[in-house]
Image (cartoon, rainbow, N blue to C red):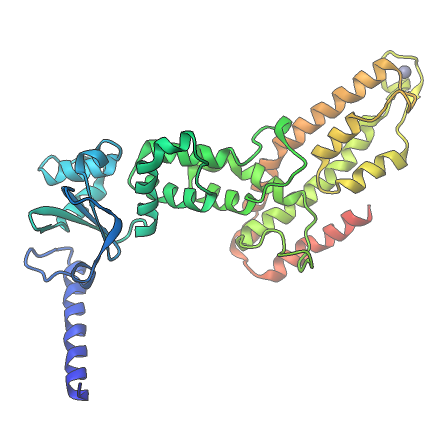
Length: 367
Ligand SMILES: [Zn+2]
């Protein structure tokens, strides 16, 4: 091909793109507008291409041939698109109108184009899930990466049952109640934080996911693997460090709860019962950023051996139980505190994070 030919092709492509752009800018989609490149060069999805399908959906450059009634029964958006296409606009879904304006007829079948929605991979994961839903009864559920794909597609297309399934799956990865917290740290904490940011229905996993990360000691360049919180935004890292500092500080409020009797009540043998500093520090050292598991360990101490009488033991355990619940309730508040500070929102510099938090982290380690 000569340079002149090359140049003229580029000019043609450029001018076509400009025309297309102008037409979009003017918000008028001409009926006789030539099909876009994505529409000309598409690939059929290798799995989701039903020979007797009666609806075409194209995401990116991948085209799916599906059964309209099957998708309509699950997806409110697709139902709205079909209704709008049939002349009954659905007010609830204003995107439907635009998608219908863009449709093309291909071999007698309506083809709809989704350029700003989920990817073909995400949509395929959702269709896979529809096809294999019954298998989940006796086969293992898909992994978190697949669930994330399903969630994105299901939430865009409002496949409510599949969205609920993905939401529940993700919720089940976290301990949503303080009683359920386990020694093992969830490997999905970063995913949980990001998903909670993206999907309002998952906001309940935000605090538990942050707690999972915060309770492990933070090391910038740990030789044992990637730094904790890798993949989080600057703001979320800031929240993580703030939460970690708060969890560490909570230990200071546990100390007075361990002292009962004497002037501090309750009515017991009238002696003053105090836990030895060494015993306290032994527990704290094992859980420096996890007062919740620390409290659980304190509750299991042999208090009789520590010279606590029965009413004193009841009182101490009650104090600890209340404290544990209070810390759990405070976690979302502590996370929110960072958002409330304007400088953390606007200032994304690394200096800000390190200067603000490294100081106190060092302090915590010393205490
Ligand atoms: Zn006593």
